[in-house]
Length: 257
Image (cartoon, rainbow, N blue to C red):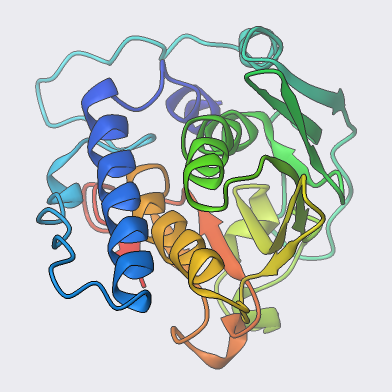
């Protein structure tokens, strides 16, 4: 339960949310302006040093008091999902063929409410509750507002993978277990907007959609410990991978590619 407790803390700091949203919006506006031929387009602000910010699930330094939220149970996590306007279905933890495959407090993520709009998770991915809470916060506070500002339309659905998969990294069962094998990861392939546009992660038809995907990918480093996608490696050429597994000796390192 220690991982679930750490994952379902109060959430990332307001300052981190503010910084990441500002970076994403600045990047989006810069891309659009450049594509339109604006010679004096403002440069985005310097990217924050995210590695210096405590991560969800990071181990406290020696002598530190456990952070608030350490005692949060599975029931508390699900209550927080409901309070945040997240629709989900409690699920059974499936049996896994590999040692170590397991999900703490598994849920199927159905939709996230942002403002007056429900954003559907088309595949209803199976996730650990703590990761579902983190991803939902990202949808509500970054994907939805960035979409409204950049695409001038509302985000209505997200096309994802299944979430949980009992397998090794990069589908190699001889490798270290993937974050998917613990319900701590989700792959995103496309975004659907209220005007009917479906923007794929691996191909954008115009400057608006390119700015949106670049912005959400850059800002994701404020919510997740791992972001991989097109250009990272051949295994992630068609989708964005988000997870919150710990990296480094103290759990405070991020892989943002």
